[in-house]
Length: 116
Image (cartoon, rainbow, N blue to C red; front, top):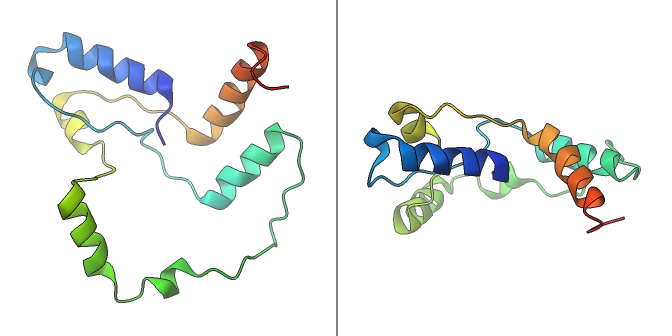
């Protein structure tokens, strides 16, 4: 996840930092969250009941058992890496809490009358 406030902060940093010149950087919030916590926060902001006990029966760990090489091939082919390590190495230490971003952005969209 990338909060646009953090993305903007990083872009300004990259444009004004000499060591960042001609470099490409990933931008993610830099935190870790579970999808269960994400959906719980999302439901709370919309005042929708979230059933923590509901299980869909989908087991991603079981499905991907022994398939690590497939992910490695995808990463190698597309160079998709969700890491802020390079940014941090170059001096950008920005961070955003994903679960706090949800109510912030929903609130902003409500203020702008984009959503009820």
